Structure formats: C-alpha cells, structure tokens
Image 1 (tube, one colour):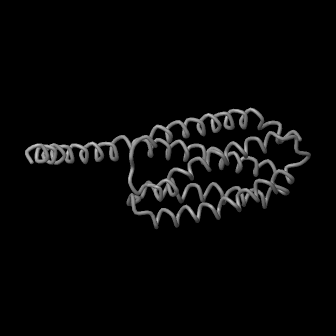
Image 2: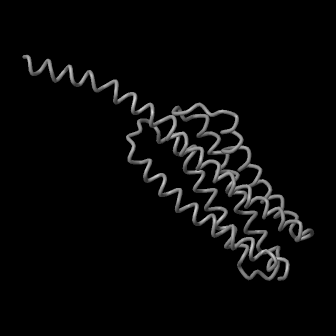
Image 3: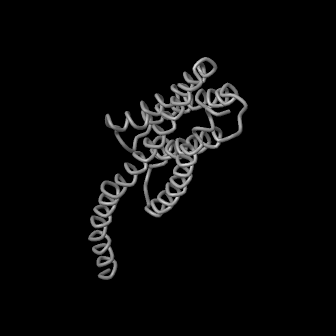
Length: 193
C-alpha cells in the first residue's frame, strides 16, 4: 500500500532511535542500581518502568508500520488494540505515581509521566477508529503518537538520571558523611574499653 510505504523512512529512523534508547535506558538503570537506594522500588514502577514501556511501544509501532499490510485498516486494528492496552497501563502508572512515597511529583512529572502518554495512547485509539475513512490523516496521528512517546521517554530518562545525580547521590553522600564520625567514635570507645 503506497500510503504506508511513504512512511518507511520515518519508522526506520524512529524505531532505530527507540531501540537504541531502550538499550541506553538499561545501561543507565544498571549503573544506578549500584547505588544503595532505600524504598525506591515504588518510584521505579511509577517513573522508570513506564519509560521503557514507552520506548518499547515506539519500537513495536515502528515495526508494525513497516510490515507489508494490504490496507491501513488492518494495521489500524493493531495500533488501536495497543492504544487501548496502553491507556489501561497509563492509568495504572498514574495510580502508582499517587501511591509511591519516594518522591512528591511536580507539575512537570504529571505532564510527562501521565498526561502526555495518555494523549499519545488516546490518539492511537482515535486514529484507529477513523483510519478506514481517513487513512492518510490517521497515519499522521500515529506518527504524532510515536514521536510524542519517543520525546516523553527521552525527557523521562534524562529526568531520572539527573534526579539520581543531583538529588539522590548528594543525599547519600551526606548520610555517609554523617555516619562516619559516629562510627569512628564507636570504634574509639571499643578500643578504650
């Protein structure tokens, strides 16, 4: 189908970027895992895992859109189902953001971790509904969703890394520095006894 064929380069570029960013996200999370963080699992489920899911969605959509479909309608069913599942997941992420106790989300967090992904996934559902009648326009909607999720993932990855570097690590270093004098005085007491 010529309409989908015109998007090949777009999805090749976006899919490659998403795949590379998924790998980079895993490298960063592995490096951050070496830091002894207390009570951060709930924050990871609310802020870290969804980023990988968004990148994975971009990668999946890029592969889906490069498949040799006979019509836009067949692909639309797939991206509509994906959008529906992802909406449910995005609502779960919102609930996790509310319930986690490691971090108090600010406006920017709600925008990039909740609102924008919901918009991207809702756009997938809407474009799937109208793809049969407005196939060309629907493809632009899918392209919008893919780019939005890619940029949300990039923002959220950067935000997580900078939070760990500029907030968590200095707190940990301060806690370690505060513990050292107490440890030394306890050791000195043991030696005098």
